[in-house]
Image 1 (tube, rainbow over the protein chains, first blue to last red):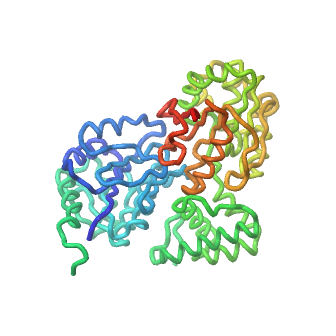
Image 2: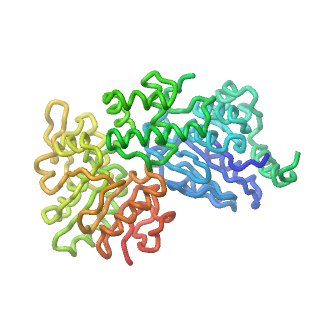
Image 3: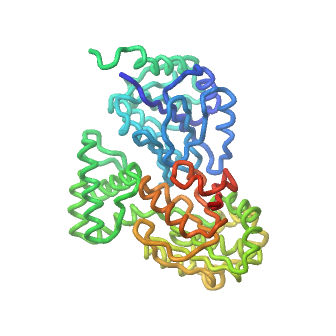
Length: 196
Length: 285
């Protein structure tokens, strides 16, 4: 199976966790990443800068109708929901879902519906339960569900809730998430196309 | 199988069938009621439709279509779900700060200023612009055309009465936006409403206009359309960009929402960027 997209959701403790994740990705990492980090309404986009300093992959805050390209890392902007359509991103200012905008569930569900079994969903550290329903949807659509090992999370509530919602999810320590994503990104490249 | 309350789609629902049903529903709404949502961005309109299906206690899009076509009251509720009425006074204060610093000096060079605020919803942002121009001494030579597709919200805009309980938030926004006076000078508190209407509304013309079907109606120095285009699909976005391009005079200013961009449109080369963060562009060819 070729994976075409990975979505990553995090809240409390996310800045450090995302830094750890992106700094561990190789320069030729081709799987596009969509990152949803809870943040304040007027969040000045320091997140983009901080992450960009830690990777050679292109990091950008998502714009409406932006095409999804290999080797790019897209951040959900503050105060919008980020929806994933096949091949591009879309934004909305619909009301907050369970107190969050951006909402991890909203992004994951739309990505799961668009990319189905070609999607990887990752839930990292966080102090609430956003992402659990979304990850359930990723798994139900046949995608891969990864959850940060709560023991390695600054705030374990979010990964714990995600594991409760998706008991079959793979539990991965923070230090190994980048290498796990890298392995998944190479699955398609390594296997002969159209075989089996 | 019933829909979830938050707009997510029931799991077993076939994606192809869903597209077919949504397209039939929107076609039906257009033919029966004249509201054209056929070119709205699929992923967000789909969420809104499912929210309505859940609220009506239904299970399929076709069931909603049946109700919508036979019961105008259901159509009214769907219309409220599908319309974009998220707004606030001095929403995104940084935008107004940059507008004051960069665009106001350009506007000073014109003897008479014409501004089009497309997709004004209930008018909060149009009144905000009126306040800004008043403080810059430009309002008396400005005509602000504020349009929206939805008559109901336009009536609210014309009245110029906004919820009193939001004034604290708006005052804060106003100060962050570089406001120079006391915000309470601009409204009269009455019951639970804050009345901005009569004085500030004197140079605003509120009118119905449909970006999906109507043509331009004048030439403007500034076109403001913030966080409206995100609800349209790419085809409709391009139509609207054509409309804006044709409605702006040379060196006219286009203001989009913070995460909207000309980059993926056909008109990128026709504008120069005045402010990257606040998405202010100037027509140069």
